[in-house]
Length: 333
Ligand code: F7E
Image 1 (cartoon, rainbow, N blue to C red):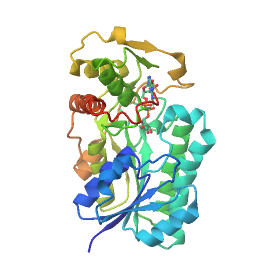
Image 2 (tube, rainbow, N blue to C red; image 1 turned 90 degrees about the vertical axis):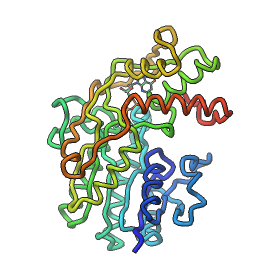
Image 3 (cartoon, helix red, strand yellow; image 1 turned 60 degrees about the horizontal axis):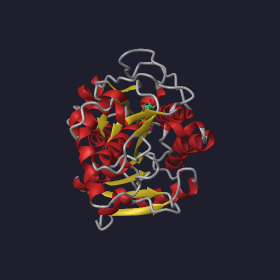
């Protein structure tokens, strides 16, 4: 029988790749989307004509809408990917962040329990931001949490409540603790896409600089396509569990700049980059590096797209989009 999946946050980067993956595997996919004043389904536009792909409107902060979605979709798997995901913004709207990330996840779990769909497999999108201040290098599933932002604090709650539902109600509720993951579909607020769009604009003579914050921050970056395969594998495992998904390599923002400028033939990028205090965070996470050996061993998961290929794909895609006049969502830098 065809499997059915419900994906919340369907307008986002990860959910669009996950929906593609599940449709390829023969699933019927229900995307749970928030209604916003501006159209927010560009990332899944190409899937809307697929007869196995459906959009249901609602919000994870509104439990009645989740219950309706569960009753319509009757999912075998529920991926909760809905959240305010921009760490920097979480200081400006800590309550909305907590409502969408933490309470939103509790609402999803409660909705499954109330509708007696406790046999539905549930995925929570955990984050390396839960580790925050480094306690161990690299971080494993055993490393303790010390989040450094309202976003990170809310993710810790989401992670712990998922484990609690697993242990309290015997639900198949699992979390991936995902390190940074990027792609051509990444929103332009995030540092990687901000850089690749900036480089594309410089290469085409549209702009002459990129304005950033902390260039010394180090992250473990993976392509989002690799990550969604990991999410799916987490829900196919014989038992519910928590897994780190990461590349196991670390690069600084400066390294990212250097690779991105190299794609357009610029070796000395310093004259094109300025720093501005307004992009610095009240509390920074300086260094994150994940150890995904548990996922490799138990799920046979490892990333296939290298850091260099990912950066190249992003820069080339932004150049092509600008040349084609598809400069939408480029203005919020
Ligand atoms: O920042 C520094 C910034 O906003 C990366 C989200 O997907 O991954 C992401 O969180 C680093 C930080 O991602 C700018 O200070 C410098 O150190 O791209 P980001 P993030 O905060 O690491 C985790 C795993 C998630 O769960 C999140 O949802 O880059 N940085 N200059 C800057 N960052 C931004 N955004 N803009 C700058 O101008």
